[in-house]
Every structure is written in structure tokens, then in C-alpha cells.
Image (cartoon, rainbow, N blue to C red; front, side):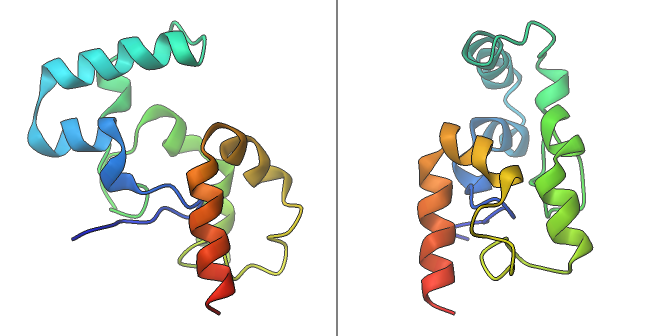
Length: 115
């Protein structure tokens, strides 16, 4: 599997929390949690809170992915990703994630262009 595109356009397979979870690498989870605590100014992030099987994996979800409005919205609309959504352009839910991860926007823009 080369990609696992989340509703927002992020590739779960490229996510360090997903990679560490799937490999069972507790040290990598700890390092990722430390990095994200600093990057997102979120002292509550722990290795246990970022264990994740991908937002469409049907298993464990990291802390943020578990409450993600984008995931809830797209799943509620029965969409594979946000790309085909009629509300894609100008979606406030996507704006923040795309500010932090412009590659996610590029992925969704590419999927949208291929529709």
C-alpha cells in the first residue's frame, strides 16, 4: 500500500504516529509526541494519546483524529475524501489543517481535478 489518504488529504502512511503505531515502536511514539507537544504547543500530548491506525482504519485514532470535525463531516457525507465535496472550496474545517499541511491540500486538489 503506497498511500492511505485521509479525508483531509493527509497521507496516513507518512504520519509518524501511524508508522510508529503500526510497527509497535514505543520509542518513536515518544519522540513524535515530544515533537508535537512543542510544534503544536500542546503539553497534553503523550505517546499513548497518538496511537493511531489511520482515520479510515476503523481502529485506534490519535487524540486529535478522534475528534476531527473533517473526519466526522466527510464520513457523515459518505465521502472517501473531501475532494468531491460540494463545499470543498472555502471549507473552514479544512483551512487549519491545510495551513499546517499544504501537502494535504495539494493531494485533495489533485483528486478534485481528476473528478
